Figure 1 (cartoon, one colour):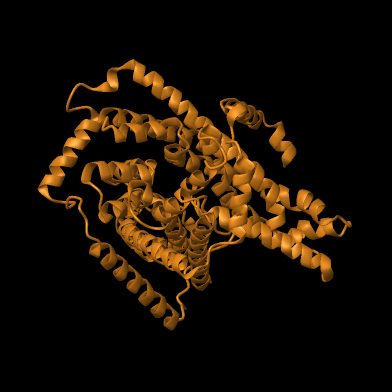
Figure 2: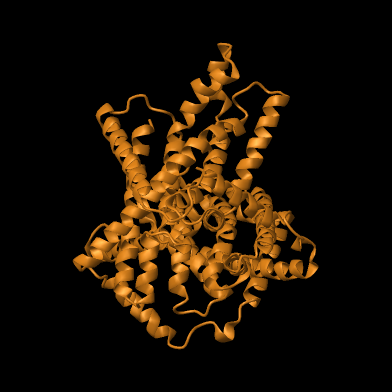
Length: 291
Length: 263
């Protein structure tokens, strides 16, 4: 399993030379049609922007990069008031990401057993089985909807209810991540090794006792590692959610871009990359400890 | 296992640090004015809309068109991201050439490049590219393709390095060079996994393309923006479900291909 893809773990993969050729040809043709028509469609959109590789456009972007790095004029990189302001904004951004990871982790952890068919669907027949299947379906539906909608669109919706700020941003990030963490967790629970589960079932344990004692210890480290990894993904997106949630580095970045203060944009980007790398480093250490 | 985890001092330190970080982040929130007045009504309206999405033909046509625009951006971005990410990943894996100074130099510089381009979020790339080149579909495509080529390259490189040595031993015993080993053994053995990873990335690209409206490009996000401004929550729900259907379709299709490729 890769941490980045919510695929199912513990499977040996090997390339099969026996692909059904008709299916392969059909899929290949569909992909080709999709790729060609996408490019044709995008090329047909009239633009009033500059052509991407004209000399005018390249000169303009060289100037832009000069503005960003502050090499064109007096640089704001030496103004320490800016650094203090940006350090505070970076703190807000970090707080938003931690809060988001925390909310998403707790909510997903609570929901995972209800989205695992081997935990929640236990009755053989009757109304109880229907009820269990409904619980399973509803939780999976919740995961699919929350996962399919990106954080920024959730942010647009969340600010109808919550005042823009750290909490609103964290909630928008959390809602999307509940779906991502929950789906991977539930899939992991469904793929779990059966012998310990059978042994505990034979003692007469109920489904949630089996989950807590037979399944959770098997997957705890894997879930924890994935949760820590999600924090890395969240920190990258937090700045962007800040555009909408009106807080942290993202909001300042949006303001500075709107006012063409490109020197400050360069400085903000530097702070952003530093905290992204910092979080990556902490996360790598934490994941090693959790493994 | 749980007890050994608690016994380890390092784990306990991590737990304390995590706890402090969570408490500190909660304390930054201004809880007294966290919600708008009438927040309950807004939530009820939104939940009501999710259960009763607008399925009038006009809205469905809008949603279909927006979905098409979003998919075209995602597809175009993925073709560029794969075209650049896979070769860069090959270089960054360091498995092409025999170990040596030139291989290490290539490997380290490819990794640094991939690490840099993927640490900036797609939308920030979009904002920077728009500020630099002006608004055009090419900018939207590049904004997704640049960081995605970084992630695809990194994951491809890691997979190539992680191929178990037992799987390579038979090939090595024939005296194959690093390059022959990469083409004959490493790449084929990571192909199913990489294919399913690319499908996952495509799914992410669709979600990202949906929010390109933030820099002024069309698609599902743009329509959601409009519908939210008009307070048409039922239309918002229809558009959200369109995105859900797109993501589910890619998920199912990717799973199908993955199954075909695994023995």
